[in-house]
Length: 511
View (cartoon, helix red, strand yellow):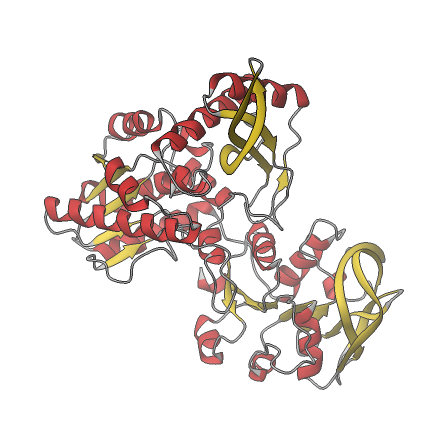
C-alpha cells in the first residue's frame, strides 16, 4: 500500500477531502497530512507523489503557511493547486501579486497540450477558479502551460524537476477534464499503477489486525450502522470468536432499530453479541446539556465507560474496535486544520481508556469505500445500503436540551419521513435523509384553536463521498404527504420545514 502512496499536504483548503476522493477514485491510495509535516516523516513514507492543496491565506502575508523547502528537492513529483501553486512559485524564486480582476467560479482556460499534465485534453476548457492573487513571475526553470483572460499564468511546470501547478481546481466537477489531469499526474508523472483495490485492502487489513491482536481479545463498539457493521465483520474475519460485539442501546436510536440490529448480528452472523440497556444512564448524563460539542463528548466518554465495564465482566479484553472512517477523522481536525465537529469516536474520546489500544480498520476509508468492503465481505444489502446514522444518534438531531418527549417526537417524525420515502421508491436515489427537532416553536391553528408547538426540519442530501453534498430535490407531493402525516400523527408538532442547504457551507447533520 505504501508503495503506491500519494500525500496531500493540507494548507487549509476547503477541497482537500475532494482531492483525496478523486485520487482514491483513480485507485491510488492517498493520505492527508498537515502542511508542516516534517521532511523526515515524508521521506519515511516514500510517497510516489505529493499534492499541495489550496488555502484561504495569502502567500505574501506574514505568517502564511509554508512547507519545508527541501520538499521541492526530493525528486518526488509535486502538484500545487491554487495556494499550492502560489507557494511553489514564491518558495522557488517566482513572484505572486494581486490579480487585476479576481476570478471566482467558471473560467475559460487555454492549455498547452504539450504538457504531460494536460495530455489528451482539449486545448480550451472550462475551469473552476477561486483566487484573488496569482503568479506574476514564474521561477527559473519553469514555463507557463495555461492562461485565462485575467490570469496570464494559470498553470506552470518544471518538467525536469517534476514540479507542476495549476491556479484552478481540477478536483471539482466544474473543471472539465479535471479528473483526466489528476490521472495524468498520478499515472504519467508519478508512475502510479492504480492498484488500490478493496480486495487487497481487506487482505492487508486482516493480516495487520491478526498481527496486532495476536492471541488477545477484542470488543467491538457496534451501532448497527454501515461503518461499525463492516468493521465488526472485518475484525471477526481476522480473529473469529475472540471478538465480542457490544451493542449499546443508549435510548437515542431510531424506531425499531434495536430489534433489527440484534436480529441481524445474533441470528445472521452468529457473532458473540451483547446488548446493553443504557438509556437511563445516557439520558441522565445529557440532562440539561444544550451545547452539541458537549453532547458528543459526553456520549463518547459514556460509550467508552460502558465498554470498559462490559470488558471487565468478560475478563481480560485487550482492544476496542470502532467504525471510525476518514471523514470523521478529517472533520475532527487533521494537524492544524479546523475542527468542523468532534466525532464521538474521534475528538470525543476521553484521554484515559482501559484498553491496550483502539482498532479502527476503516479509519482511512470514505463512506462509499466502506460499502465496497462490505460487499467484498458479503454483508447483506440491508446493512450495506443502510442509511448513515451518527454515533451520538438522535442526540444530535434534537437541537438543544434532550428529553424523552423530544426524542419520541423526532423518532416518530423520522420514521414517517423514511416510510414515505420508501413508499415513493426514492430510498435508493437519496444518499441520506432524516428529521430534526429544532429548538423553535411556532404559532399554528389546529381544530380552530391556537397552538404553539415544535418545528420539525426535514433533511435529505445527494452525495457520493459525504464530504460535499447537494440537497435532494424531493417531489413536492412526497414532501406534502410527509408534512401532513407528521403534523397529524406526531403530537406536539405544528410545522414542518425542508432544509435546502448544501454541504458546504452546512454539514449534513445539524449538530
